[in-house]
Length: 268
Image (tube, rainbow, N blue to C red; front, side, top):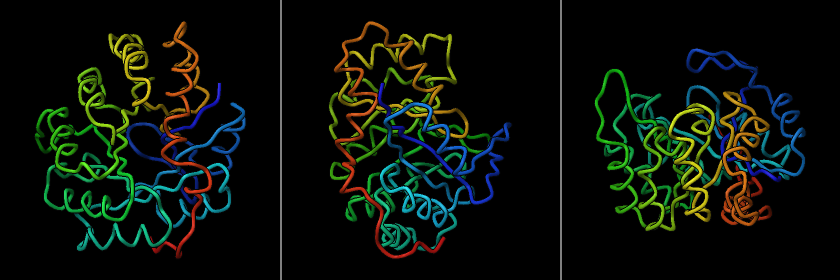
């Protein structure tokens, strides 16, 4: 089966120390892992402070047939988040990664909302990490946060990274109502294996196949692991629906020619 991986990362030195695990996040390893699954593309996603924009764009430009470049800002560290988003668009990125949990802010913070608004005006798709829960800050129920952002930003496309995790089934109604959002199952596919989330994922892929996508969250997991898990959970699902989730939905949003990286050199 073909895969359009919704979420991959690389770092300049290959080091990856996010969370409790340390992985090889080198470009060479990612390319080798992608080669194992045959025809493929992937979103190559920066994370401010972890996987920098410059390296992300360099790799995307060097392998333009494979990677869709997604830049990132930390809205709490950037004194001008709107300008930061505009600079990403000028540099040739097609998406904006926002990570409220890692950077310690409320996803409904006015700076985050300003960045999302700027992304919509700049034509960038927002890749929003929806695992919002934090040790030092309470947040509104993830589904309500997503609901608020989708309703107030109808002109902005969203990839809802990780599908809010354990509450992924609650995204069914929102995904059904809002054509400007894709429910992403990266990380969640494997993180909750063996739980009731398995059944929820199967239901979403069957009932919402044109609004769901999958990925590995490399280097946390590999494309091979993500694809194998997806095939296991959707065994018996109609082939066209499997293809929609595995690659067609992202391919429609990011057609190869239109999403080839360009623009000025990114500065961070």
